[in-house]
Amino acid sequence: MEWLPHVTVATVVEKDGQYLLVQEHSNGKLVYNQPAGHLDQNETLEQAAVRETFEETGWHVELKGIVGISLYTSPHNQVTYHRTTFFAQALNHEPAQILDDGIVQALWMSYEDIVASADQMRSQLVIQCIEQYRAEHRYPLDLVFG
View 1 (cartoon, rainbow, N blue to C red):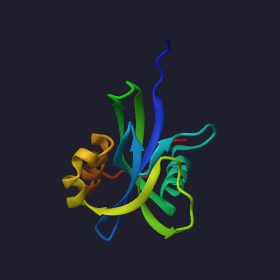
View 2 (cartoon, rainbow, N blue to C red):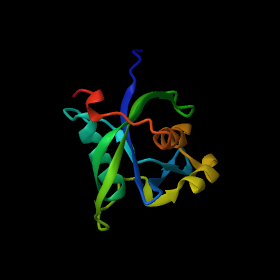
View 3 (cartoon, rainbow, N blue to C red):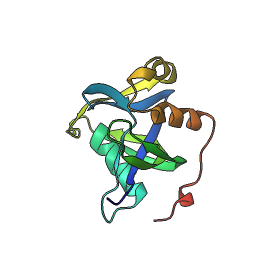
View 4 (cartoon, rainbow, N blue to C red):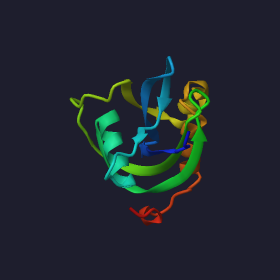
């Protein structure tokens, strides 16, 4: 069997000291995650991040840069994810937006509440990416081409 990583994107969105997360069902548990998802065919990483953020939260965002690029192998399915995490500014919210399947709600959480809920995160990447963002690990969008 040929091994192929799954290309995904995620977005860290901070507003007034709060971070935009989604509460979603994953592997039979209710967990928190950044707005995130898979790259679609014929789409750039940037387009995927904006699309996934809107589909999962109802928030329109403007990407400002990149927090980092990571590899993560899920202990649940052994799939390796190649994840590009962006950071973005929240522009406006469409509360009537129907959220993606599996998403219970979009919510804003403080860093302290996120850390206190560490055992409810979908993966360690959620807190790791927020901590990288808080530590000014912020790179220009043109770091990634295409």
